[in-house]
Amino acid sequence: MNSMNGERFFDLAMKVIARQASDAERAELDGLVSREPELKEEFERLQAGVRAAKDALPLVNAMQATAGELPGYARGRLQTKVRQTLGRPEFADKEPDRSFAGGWRWVLGLAATATAVLLVVLPMFRTPSAALIQLAMLETTGGTRGADTNEVALFQATWKGSPVRSFSSASELGAWEKNWPTDAGRSTAKIIYDPAAGEVRVFGHSKGKAFQQAFPVEKDLATTLAEVSRFIREHGF
Amino acid sequence: MMSTPNLVALQRGDAAAWDEAFRWLWPTVFAVSQLKLQPYCPNEVEDVAIEALEELVEKVRVVAAPEELKPLAASIAHHRAVSLLRERFAKKRGQGKTESLDAPADDAGETKHEPLAADSPLANLEQKELAERLGQSLEDLKPPLGGILSDFFLHGLRYEEIAKKRGVALGSVGVYLKRGLEAMRRIWGRREES
Image (cartoon, rainbow over all chains, first blue to last red; front, top):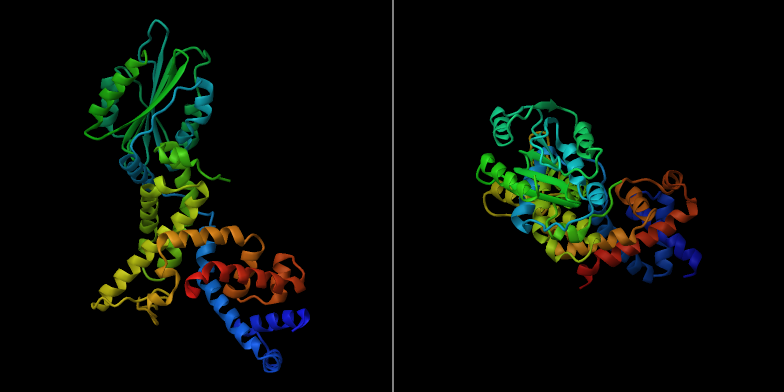
């Protein structure tokens, strides 16, 4: 079979297999096969290939999907799985500017799942070097949960005198995360409570070194906040 | 557009890296889960997709390259969906008979036609093997091959319609189909030939 006939055979075979062939095309294929019986075997081979393609193509296409967003409620569950399975990562100290730009994108990630943000920003106490502590509470349950007054009270009890403000825009959290004191040398810690993820995360810089840590709320929030308080004290706050 | 996640960060449990990976993988696991479950138990689609990501977390330490993540996630979602369907149909029949998966439910929620799941070669591939084949398919079906195959075999478009849709010469549609089909047969026909 020459290449012209080979191409014609393939096109006809495809159309017959896909049930797109006209009577004339079907007759033409029959004629080719009767003249060259080995084409029958080739036709069967093509049929097997088409079956494989029809079976696998939907899955291959689905794998390349790009639409759709991870549901907000799933994030906490999945991050819990990460902690339980892989434990906690060790963070290396980095230069403050670089670590905030590259190492804290997870805060922006939280924005995708947050529907309301309860934010508390306060300078808790100032060490002689004027260290600053900023606190945020992140609501992730679509407004049905609301700011839990007990949780706010716990924050206020741990860092007394904290004013409480509520936010409902994800972009506000992102802006807050990026908003550092203009005095680059000033030690600053940001603390975010994420109830959906069941953890309190801390990041900041002190004495020219960056730090970050996540604290799971395993027993209760008060216990976790006490751990957080100890942690930032160890970093000079 | 999200990029391929940092595998090393994932393997050490970096929460930020996982956040990014979950967002990147979600469309895949959801689409695979939906593909299998939507006609029979649409309420389970999201749960199965989330479970697939949880299982991926368990397996991430044995992943060798970030490019393996998406095929692995897809194969996990596929296997979970197939297992759920088998369980459901077996329960429905009350005799452990495995039913399938390829026939949609009618208005009463009953399947009109339920060929055996074992008829589908994909349903019986090992998870690892399925992931490898999916990864290979991604590699081999570079545009416009995958699209043209889908147009012809899944959507029933004619050569003329494909040429117009894809902006290729009419005479080259058959060439693309032949190349794509050969790739699919090479990747997915291995089990049948072995």
